[in-house]
Image (tube, rainbow over all chains, first blue to last red; front, side, top):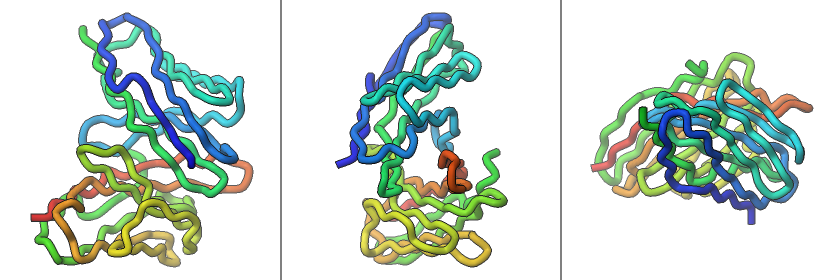
Length: 109
Length: 115
């Protein structure tokens, strides 16, 4: 069964303190792994798509990487405005999209 | 602004009633997805339509149904509503073109409250 597990559930950082979020996945026929950011009460905002192991994508303070079993979202020198829930999702061969429960990130000034 | 619109923003109704949620995808997107997000659960995939046809089905209850119309907008119908159906319902769209990644762009959601 396709499954996505994100860790940690919550992460508290000081401004400027770099860290990583983990997304472990099990899926048949990976069509894509996606990272989204979600602010409270709003729809998820697309960040990255990764398709093959070894692939990396960067955007401002965020960098996403992919292996055959997991993906990491690295946050470099975070700012308070980076506080949000970060969601990982996979699309498998059956076209179903499975989301992880998310990591709630809190960045304190 | 993702370009995906959803109406209404808020909906308050009673148990046993039926409601319809509406979604207009981004211009040019062929796929529409529906998700349910409640406080104690993450985003639960309900169903996907591609160019008018059902493409994938997730944890959608039999009391729920959806369709995508020729102009590509979609509606999610929820009937015999129960208290546990109270949640945020999101619609997303993607281009779903062959050879491209299927990143989804989400609407602002409809907050459904069942009393």
